[in-house]
Image (cartoon, rainbow, N blue to C red):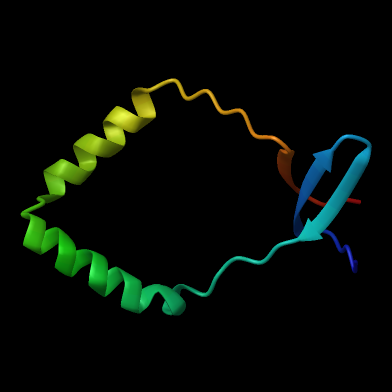
Length: 79
């Protein structure tokens, strides 16, 4: 698994089994095409920056209740 200090991983548990999987963040350049498409669609839909900031404020103020089965925990490995 090559766990070294600072590496990120996810722990997935179901019944009596735990699985650890190392994860890597995406390279932002891989999203350039998706970002361009999203901006074009937002322009067509007539979205303004204030619409986005209001949606973020509303989502942050909402108390989310998540129930994930199997349970997923992410973490960072420390020695």
